[in-house]
Image 1 (cartoon, rainbow, N blue to C red):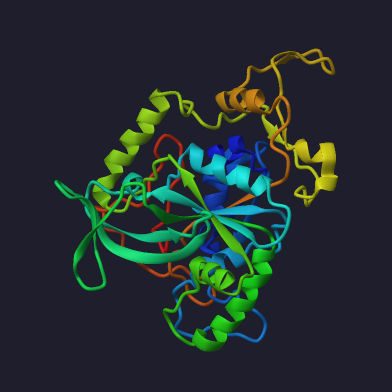
Image 2 (cartoon, rainbow, N blue to C red; image 1 turned 135 degrees about the vertical axis):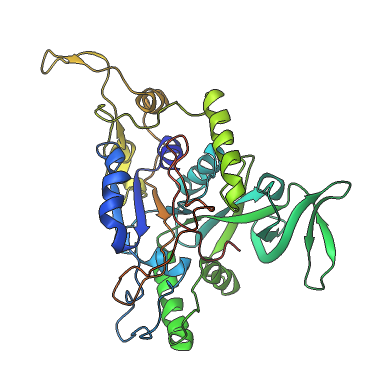
Length: 377
């Protein structure tokens, strides 16, 4: 996802993680991005609450995806995207998201990448998805959580409705896979809703504050409009343990087809990402707003007379794409690693691992880890 975001024009990555695995995360994940793209890490914990609120003593469950995004409020001043860190969204998803965010020119301009439901199914069983309805102009009108979605021979894609009846869905029906785009005003709007949520549910042990809760309220109050962006990309993830071999095979197919290089990040190479002004979304940033990427060329350095190293695969890709400058406007990617249950003071809860169900694995160097939490709808 970071690789796809970088070549789509995103200039910074913010990871939301649990503090209890910070050291491992920095050593095993962040090290590969050093000198390649600006990265920040923020922490989600049960006790990270606004002034005046205290979590219940027995609460171990994180506060949800909406709370995770708020953890990055002090690090993001530009239009930004939000994804799950353990899902594969495909190159085109980031491209359509980047184009939309580049064109935003004011508050309340949100978007959601609507994946075609036929591109999100599991071969190992049924899935749940947030099925989207749009108005005549392509803006989000509603999201309805549908369960037991699967492909049935002779009928196509079916799901079980609230009356326990099976109904059909067209393959191209857009569904939410938690890939959102927001303008910076989202943070303040969400913070107000979170205060209200805590006043009503803050003493409950399992209540969660979700991104769709914020989006629905923004639509209802006309604080924002949410454009549903179509993508032909195929989403996949490890919904079931049996999905893992298929995910590895799909990524291998993409590599063989040339969609991705064999190695995404080659350590020791000279690729660097240079940030422009803090809020590069401003039209006033001019040329500076286009200087997000800088790559070291091959040949001999005029400054030192030393032979430069050949470009790595990502250097060649990004150098070719951005030799005339990246898309105008700064954009950040907020990647949410699902946070395992932690105590109020951040201690990891003891939870046995079932060897028969692998934890998220690294396949073809595309990072995927953690167990899913929260709601996509």
